[in-house]
Image (tube, rainbow, N blue to C red; front, side):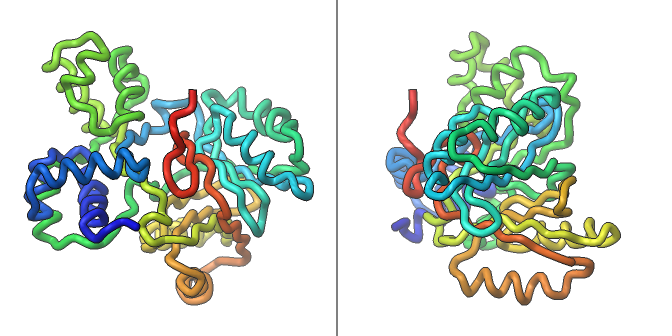
Length: 327
């Protein structure tokens, strides 16, 4: 179990993932050595990683897709394991409800989507059927989800090291920046010295490149911790059918809900997908029966409850932790 100081550190990193140890220590009112030791321990225990969330247009041509997979009886586990190994699969989970396996996939090029969706995924042994939805727009992503534990004063201290993106053009991403994106994706706290050594650049050049990449929003550092480690033991992917005039309003409300890790407007049989986390069944019941009820235009919903998370943001998971590195 994570301790209260552990949770405070995670909450601080959610606000400022690249904050220095000194700034984290000041915000949490502990010594820098204590923060450093705690951070190393959480990383060594495979509980926490700070990664870089790469902007879609810098990673691929085209947006991600949600994919629901039904399997033959008894085949969900093996099929999910096989599907999780696809390089295009960002997220893979065994689920109950709408489907047996849920995937979030991001294909490098739109032309490759047909092969993946129509041939490769259905061709996995045990897969009986698939259904997909194209993401048109994301209203919130996992980097925006927060543990609300820190005071306003603590948040102000951390905000000194926040980088607020101001937008970018994917066509302007140069070769050195593309190499840096790969480094930041794996380690969102990489230093200029470390990046410079890996890229063969001076520390000052690497620093300017990191700041430019973050300021333009090409990469957004974020903390990766399985929600169950934070007390959110129930996760669900909820597909909502909504009348056209109400889609934007409902999606906006869902994006502001405390449970929301990923809310997107999609093209398919559904209108909006809400990927949410809840502390228990009662909390999820309140969301479905109380929080959704006043929203206009919702005509149907389908729920897939996560049973086991195998991969999230291209990182394998195992019993609520990061899996050991696979070679």
